[in-house]
Length: 499
Image (cartoon, rainbow, N blue to C red):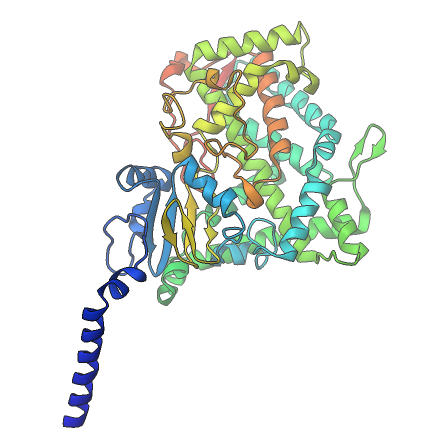
């Protein structure tokens, strides 16, 4: 026993002597410059800091601790980015280092074992999927080729509103915008739209899907507490929703493989997104392989990205127009002057509507539909704006905080479309103070598709009708309470009377 005690004494003495003789080496050489971090709780770390509205909670913290802030989510280190300069470092300067998302349990179960383009790790498979999306599905040429689908659905939307106006019935604009986004996408994506019952069921499924993707799973941050997901029912809900979505997509894919597309445009059968995916799947071309699960995973991406986010933008735009009568009047003046008496606005007319585009941009800034970008993972040690970020650190980019940053925007908490008039700032990922669709390798490839639906819908709805709130309520006091979820839409539906 005395031998062991003496050995331990010698070892500790040696370590102490080394530290005394080499203080610089022991205290400074290996010390990292970590980002500022708030006080944390035992075990859970900073998980409680996310709150019910994470984008707002994290923005408040960033005011105290800076635009690059270190959190500990259980056993996982995470960095929150809240400035344009820091976001540029992540999505441009070190884009390759942060090109892989973390493997989250809910994403793995819902997105076909990460076979989609959003959650797949960076590599050859992901590059193939991204290339298919950009070149085959969402190119400007493809988006323009479905112009008639968008215009037909807008005509039907206007007719439904006209009917409600004739009966003096208030219109649920939230439902209206959700329906047109869903109908346009389903026709373009799968060759047909679904009737009222099926359509509502699909929209409900998509909303539940998005809510679960935005739900933090205890298992991701505290693996030894994974059993809680079984107790609170999260695992059961995720598995049920995953099965419901897979059943729907399996039926759609099998039907298309057996019968082909039903969509006829201009007297010709139109190849839709699913046709293209199945053609690639069946062709077995060298170097390009996507299996049936890959096809369904990409369909999920398109459904999630092209319906709820698109309708949310139009919903918030209309909300702010009704809260700001002068803005509404200016937009209607522009749209009606360009229309010059036409009952319907066509897509070529929108080229002459700069204020309409400014309203859309300001809505994307003021009510960015997905306030927190999907998290990224540092694949190696890296220095960002002077701070050391270790490999394995999760990175959250708070788009909402960046779009409200007074260093980038004058009066950021005001809805002011004029800020985008004669401005070169755009949403395509080149200006990091304005990144509603992300930027870099992981930027959203569906920008053109979503914006085309937003512009055409909004232009026609303000051209054809004037709008008031039911019971003579004041539009300037219209509530803007947010619903919790992956996308941030209105907590209550937007109801208005067309006059």
